[in-house]
Image (cartoon, rainbow, N blue to C red):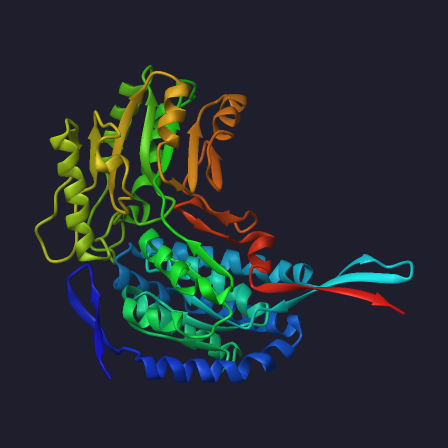
Length: 457
C-alpha cells in the first residue's frame, strides 16, 4: 500500500505518514457500508439524531485538541480553528433541532376516497468528497444530514486535512455511528476517482470548479444526485452612503483575509464609489498594516501560512500580471523568506477587469480595489464573472442596497455584511459556483428522496 505525507504548512515538517487507499480498499469499504446502510436506515430518526448529539458533545469536550490538529494541518490561526469547530457545532445544532420536522411524513389529503401523503427515504450510500479549507464546516453540511437521513457515507477528506478527517471518524464511532455506516477514504485526487466508479446513490463535492465539473461529467450517466459546492469571485461594493468608512473597511478586510482568503465566499473584488474611494483606501491600508502574519499556534496571529505551497506561486503570478497591466501594488504581495508557505497580503489599486486578479478565483490573501462612478457601473462589474456565489453591498440606504442586490445572479447576497453563512438559509451557488444546496431545510432534504403515496381504502 502506498503512503503520503501530511505536511505542516507553517514549517514544512512532516506531521504524519498515512496509508493511501487503493481501488481494492475503497471497494472493501463500499461493500462494508452497503451491508450496513439498511439497518441504519431502519433505526428511528430520533435515535440517529441522538448519535449526532453525542458527536456534538465530543466536539465540545475535545475542542482544544481538535483545533490544534486542524491548525497544524492547514495552517489557520488557532483561534480561527476553534471558531470553525464552534461554527460547526452551531450547524449541527440546527440539524438536531429541525431534521425530524423535515423528514417526517407529510399528509396532503386526509379526506375523501383517496388519501395522499409524502414520505422521505434515504438515498442509500453517498460520497462526501470534502475540502481542506474548512473541513469541519463544509463536512458537517453533508455528512451530518446524510447520516440523520439514514444514509451511509464514504467520506473523503482532502489529503491536506486527513488528520482532521480521521478525528471526525473516530468521534462519530464513539458517538454510536456504526463503522459499517461511515468510512473514511484517504488520499489525493486519484483515490477520489475510485469513488466515481462505484455504484453510489449520490455525490457531494466541495472544492474547485475544475474538479467539480469533472465529477459531474463522470457520474452523469448514473442519474443520481450530484451536488457541487465550488468556488467564487465574490464582489463587495462600497457606496457613497456609509456611516463609518473605517468600520466598512474593517469588515471588507476581514472578508478578504480571514482564513488567509482561503474561502469560497471570501471577498475577492472590491468596488468603491469614487466619492469615498480615497477615504476607504486609506482606512483599508492602515488596518491591513496592523495584521500579524506568523506562526498559527502563537496567540495574536491574524494570518498563518497558506495551506498549499503551489498556491503561493499562483497568487504571486496574479499580482505580477496586474502590475504588468498597470495596477499599483499598494501593500505586500511577496513571499516571506522563511520555512512555511507565508506571504504578505497583497493590496492592489488601479485595477481593471483585464487583470487575472479580477477574473480568476484567487483563494488567498490578495485583493484588487477598483474605483467606480455609479451604482450602474458597479453592478455591471460585479456581474462580470462566471461565478455566482455571493455579492455584498455596503450602504446606509436599504432600498438602494436591495435594488442592487436583486440584480446579482448569486445564491447569496449581503447588505452591510459579507463572508457569512447561516444554517437557517440555503447555501447554494449559481453558474460556475455549483449545483444544489446545503443547509436550511433544503440541505436536510438533499439527502433523501420523496415517495408519493396514493391510498384508497
